[in-house]
View (tube, rainbow, N blue to C red):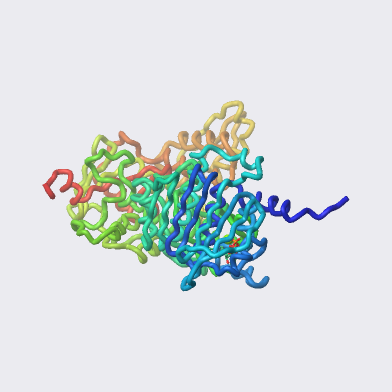
Length: 590
Ligand code: ADP
Ligand code: MG
């Protein structure tokens, strides 16, 4: 027999979708507060949110009439008709959060519209709604959710420890604090303040408040509109890359979302500077007209569907790639990963050299090193202009100064004077990047130029690999190494990439063979192969280089993208400014 379920059961089933743990309640209540135009939001938790979640705001409040309907399913003030669904500008719109939360807890709402003489209170006791009654309260709204899941033991059992639930709640508040830097937030747990951020601070300040200094100091700003899509925020420098996505913050029209395509676009832009398997750190706000995106595809609205996913992908990819190519230019590669404490800190080095007055926290936004380019003058227009245009502060030139003197140190590093300090280059890392960029340009631009060998060389394959000789030859030819099967298990090589003509063809071929034997041959694999070719062919630590050779390297660096990092993501150069030297030698402020 088919029966209609009683409302009570329907409510509890629905609650399971929206309210899966305390953090979900925190999220829904903060969304409501923001939709109500709050400028300050205070969250108070007890026992990881299990015993109490209280969210108080100074928003527009609700009249007793509103309060009467507040717990009804599909009761909302944010949507009128179906058309509205495609122009959603509020965070909520489904009108079911409070109904769901009320069904699985003991909830009380106190609210008072601005200007009303007094407020009112409604309660929902596990689905039983009590009518509003007058109550004294300040303007705004306070929602109190007690004993979450007290009437749904299965749910309750799935909750984790207090500490774990608290950390989820913190993450939830953090996301809002980042997406709404204008709003003040406080979070208290068991009576103790966990954090507080004041109103009207910038995103950068919020990032500094929530994450360790290393993160805040290694950010590259982005601010650009492309294809009608606005991107704003900060990209973490590659050295922040993580094995998880916990610092990948994406906000779409001020709503935190997860989106595989956008993340993939960021990763693709990043892959020139970030080792594989790592996820980029970013705090990125994507803005687009509300009718370009359907936010109504997921109960908690954490996933969305773009009308034109390809457009979003390319806008994100292009913008981020440009910002990184600019930010990862030669000069600005972060400093040594573990800088000794007396030395400069990555990211701090190129800021204004003036001593800072006490102009308040905003000064921390001072010129970000991320957008310096290798020189202030000629750099390849296609990749660096955009980033330079928007933010370039007074970029110090980080090229050998006029003297042109250069010193090779331990046959590994080149040290030279720059107009504003001292540059140190890792000769292998830089050469590797240059070769890779050149190879890649040829590869992507229709083919790698070949250089015929005077005498063909033959490389023997191990028996296990001989079976794959045609696959290997195909890959080799694709990469500009002219090769054909020869004899039982040999490969005859008659030409190599012109760019790599000085390297040992044996070494190049063996490198490719190893790689092909290891993995598939997708586009990414070819990139990997170009990496390894560049790595093989690049000068090594231990190679003695003449001054002219070193200078030529530095000159080339000015012309290519990503010159600040080798293809494996290591910095190619470290720069010490005069100001930093002065600090180190205590010439200043001693
Ligand atoms: P939705 O947010 O999807 O509309 P909710 O169940 O979260 O659904 O809230 C129902 C309605 O209650 C909202 O549309 C809004 O009118 C009102 N409301 C909820 N919380 C607040 C608040 N903090 N301040 C003012 N109004 C609120
Ligand atoms: Mg809501």
